[in-house]
Image (cartoon, rainbow, N blue to C red):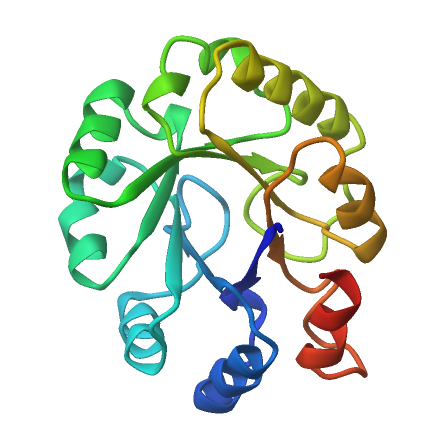
Length: 215
């Protein structure tokens, strides 16, 4: 069964405890925490206080997506805040291999977030060191964007690469995830989805009803 992670940048942080309670009742698998510095992407998102508060309210997986420059300078900080998974972007650091090794050595799952226009060629030499690839279906930085259709082809090609090497690397999709998209991408090898405003948040139905329709 695919994993479903709630994108907390889309949640109502003014009533965080209630949001977490409702998501737990819906049997969400974990929480996707976008961290943005206003430089690597033109937006700011979840701060350290937000992550700390979420960690106190749940024992479920915290999936930290770093959209920041020089993430290697802050890895220990996010691990100490309770990150179970950390992904970063290839062009955010000069030493990709070193950063992968550092995260992995501390018992945290490590992934690469792949922007829509980025080629799989950049993953070819490091994919065996990864636990997951976070495929971006939109350009990172803002919620509510339109899905970039060639993402589907990239997912199919990524699945072929993983299978050709018999690797246990998970494919996750982040951006414009809908019920219909989940249904057909399950068949293409996607094993985890980041749920935001396209499917989960700001909808008339409660979270439990929405999740029930897609599992």
